[in-house]
Length: 399
Image (cartoon, rainbow, N blue to C red; front, side, top):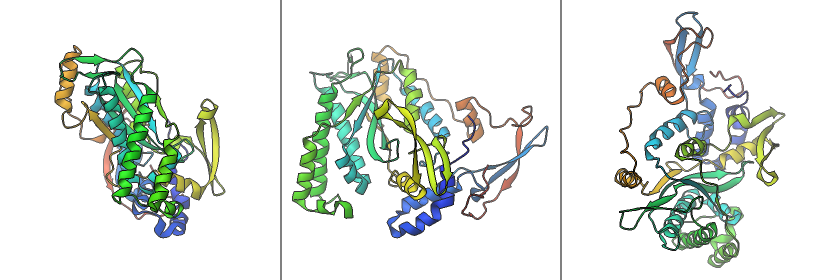
């Protein structure tokens, strides 16, 4: 795939300094770090090395990546590594994709309390799936799954939701049988939605009573106990969205499909259309119009503001594993599942290459070593390039 002409980094370099100055102390330290990382990614500011072709003497500088999880340019290799590690977890059964979304009123609380509410979102989702699945009226089994947090909609607005990928069955209560769900049906979404609403609202109420929630100016009225109770009560009277997509065609399709979700950032560089006159235009899918592709133009500072809404708290884990896929008992529980499904024991994972170019080739089958000019010889490292001072602006050298 050709490199995108426009990048989020270009927007930050052109308009980032003005945005920082205007935001002042309101711009969180984590957001400032993300902006700087993306601006510097794969530029001379991070240093790198110079490569030369053995045959035609073509040279190219290769600059280091920032490795920030919010950077659009740093996710491909991380995604490929994740997929390689998860292949051993695949079971020969149906797989389902279930999405848990909170209403706008709860999303507003989350925006002021990201770490607390996002953690509660994971816990409420896990409680809901495991409780309903364990109920003999539904599946009657211990399930395993992983969940991925996304916080954005197609127009970069704040829209927190969890994508859950779930094998279609689980272990019986005594652990001696594999209990399969019905073909093409996992669990009733209405039951899931009611349980999810109840569990999350109770958790939010507990968080308020224990002083874990804090509210900025736009939600300052919720500092009052009765006002907060009325606010939650209104959401109890609405239907919450839990969406179960059709089952995957097979286990192998799961990782290919979900790999698009696990390391996605708020917007990819490929969606950018133009940066003109202090405005940014990008493509988005309008799901209210059957996924029709449209464009949206925002002022540059508004684009940056929306992008930074999705910066996660430091150290926050946005991919989590539950049930028999939980990290503590994953190996033993998966071995039992494989045996009950008549699968061969999982093979030991192959050692991963240490050089990023070898790792990239092993995972993608594309070489970073072959000369892009003559296509006949290898590129060799001939010089290490030191870091240089970061210069804001569109002229910053990139590889």
